[in-house]
Image 1 (cartoon, helix red, strand yellow):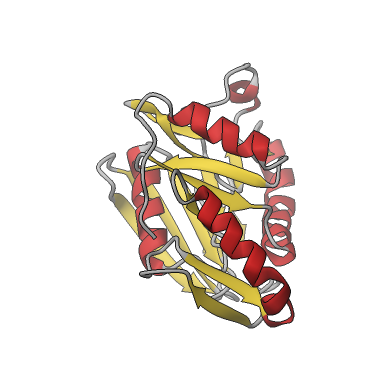
Image 2 (spheres, helix red, strand yellow):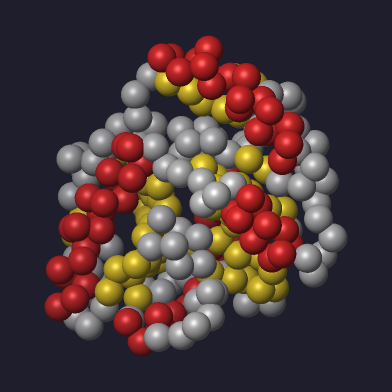
Length: 236
């Protein structure tokens, strides 16, 4: 897919327009200067987020922290470039604002759940972005591969001082005071069909459950065609 970027300075307006016109069915981030529209998460995506939230909420509250979703993080030098993790752990005082964007350094942990269509290069790009945003720690879980990656101590240049990886069933030692996260009960994505829309990149692949192939393919192609001029569309 060829991506035509919107005019700099109008990115936030473009993202707002896409979310409004979608009726709330698309969530838009701006990664590396290009909008990325993600539909409502699948059931297992949402369940993964919910189980991690349930595991962290009580522990966070004991230490004066809270968990939240739909909280966006800007790059320090470019508020028109922002991402929205699936889950965040941070002090409640950081949320006591009318601003939409919360600086990355105010987070304790950001959690990102990979979509079925997300490739390893895409995960690496996002991980580098969170380092540049100075988020202290990023937990990336992949229900497709049954793997996780925890990065901490961002250098701010797209790299991390510490990165650990593992598979579902292994314990994750999170930054203090969050303790250990168990992963054995995190759900896995089911079998899917990969449909290439054009020259393959990390964002131009649509993955569909086999039961939805025929009914969804035509509408999916229309959606991607409509958004092609301004956004990358990653379907979960």
